[in-house]
Image 1 (tube, rainbow, N blue to C red):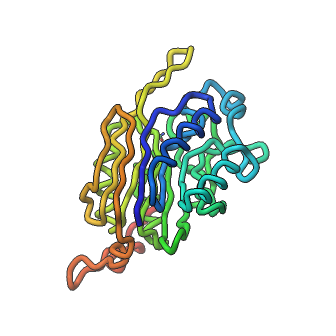
Image 2: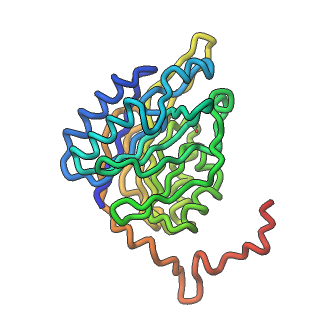
Length: 265
Ligand code: ACM
């Protein structure tokens, strides 16, 4: 499977402008099976209020981004996983949408909201999900989910071969943590982060750390983008490499777990 991550600075509050920018990049690369784009990549990240983020949020299906996804994934015969602001009835979610070759495969709604996201979005209330796309089992989680190892573990235990991870990272630890997530779960990971700085009139400001990366099932980086420049990272994987969880002749990553002793609740 040939996968591409697109790291960029979304135009704040400008959904059509971002779709146009993304389309020009996607259309200038041939033969990509799966594109992974950052969290909230059609809207930008920092908003003053629910009303403000609500004004650029969209239903899936039904809005301009879902129509665009339908047509671009069909035209390119590719899959796209991208972060969006999703409106569903009275609720607003920080979501990742999965499209393949003209079809809406599904969506994941971020469950671990970061900082001020708690004032803007409703948390998703379903576990991170594994979607089968082109025969490959792709787990999806969003940005701050990385700090809860349970998110990646849930995906791996449910059969994910690769974890697609749209992000708007601000803390510096995630790229190294994702190396561990891949080692401890024997999965590929692909973090598509954004770059740039956003500011609000009340003085809130965030700078995003870029450094989008992919890791293999042993935590080796297959590539990493810069901290502050737009770019595309392309890598090839054989998803089946993640199927064996054998560590030694006598150890298996999943079978050796002791859930009855962990007392997680
Ligand atoms: C984050 O979850 N966007 C830091």
